[in-house]
Structure formats: C-alpha cells, structure tokens
Image 1: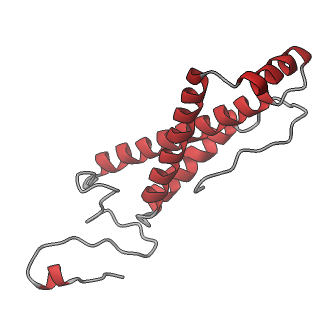
Image 2 (image 1 turned 90 degrees about the horizontal axis):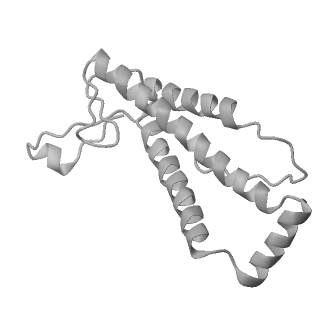
Amino acid sequence: MYMPSEANMNGNNMNYMPMLLNWNTEGLYVVFSWWHPNNIGLLLLSMLFCVLLAIVHEFLKYLLKYDLRLRQSPDLEKSKKIEAEKIIGISYNQRVLRTLVFSAQTILAYFLMLIVMTYNGFFILAVVLGAAIGYFIWGMPAKTNSSVEASTVCH
C-alpha cells in the first residue's frame, strides 16, 4: 500500500515503502535514508548486521537478568551485602552502569522494532534469527532459586 502525499503530488521525488509484508529489494530503505541495500552484497551485509544487533540485544537482556539474579540470590554473604545496599544504597557507578545497560537494551529493542517495521521478509528473518541465536547462547541461564524474569521489550 503506497500513500501519496502533497509533497509527492507537487513534484517532489519521494520514495515510499510498501506497508505489507514483502520480499522486495528495490526501493528498500532501512531506518535511515542512507541505509539503502540496493544490491545483493549490501543486502546480505545489512542482514548480517541485523542478526548481530539482535544477538547483542539478547546479551544485554541476559546481563540485566543476571544482575537481578545476583541481587536476589539466597547466598548468606550476598544477603549481608544486599542488606547493606538497602541501608546504604548501591554506589553511583553501579547505578550508572545498570542504567547504561538498560538504556542500551531499550534503544536496541526499539531499533530492531523499526527494522522489522520495514515489513521486508529478509530483515524480519534476520532479526528473528539473531534473537534465536542470542537466546540459544544466553537464554538458558544457570538455575537459581529466583523465578524473576526481566520484561521483553518489543520482541
């Protein structure tokens, strides 16, 4: 479905992408106007990049879950440390690091969502493949007594 606008009707040359699932490579733009995989090499390179982004996203989700599990571990020594953290609070550097990891994971999740919203089957498969690989590597953490799961953002 192509949606013409006034700018296009006035003679400005604007490219429109289909808003339906497609496998087209002509006229394909991914998130930015300069990300235009117009040949098979650039398409494959772009797909590989999307796979890697999705793997990194799964790793960041794993880091957040791992941090949460460490803080909720029933280990006595850790319990004392956590009680001290509740009284004193976590250090500024720890808060900054946790915030940066969470922010990176959120930004990456929304960026992957925008890639999928190209409605291009090649890029949808690349993101799903990357998420599957990342989940295979980091999705089955060591068993703990905690059943807390971090939320999944966007996919």
